[in-house]
Amino acid sequence: MYSEKVMDHFNNPRNVGMIPDADGVGQVGNPTCGDIMKIYLKIKDNVIEDIKFKTFGCGAAVATSSMVTELVKGMSLDEAMNVSNQMVAEALDGLPPQKMHCSNLAADALHAAIENYRRKEAGK
Image (cartoon, rainbow, N blue to C red; front, side, top):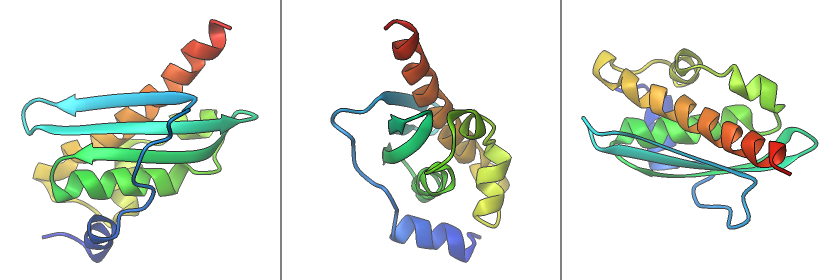
């Protein structure tokens, strides 16, 4: 049902936690399945220097959160905004169709954190 990569990221998630002085924070949830993801960003010179996540949800939700943090660390904000749910799922060697919404949440939480950062910067 799940690929080896999904199981690896679920059993050994990368970048779990929070960044107390995060430059951007994004949270999304899916009321249907109950998954909630929160992503914290540390930005330097428009590049994601550090990223952490906290996820409440199923194994696929944890795996997609972990994978999205691995994909975007070191990327520019513009590059990270182009990361799609399909890219997250492909990086995990696929997800079962009924779990694809989890990859949507991971990309959406990332984009929300970037937008949060950009709003803060625009207000300075």
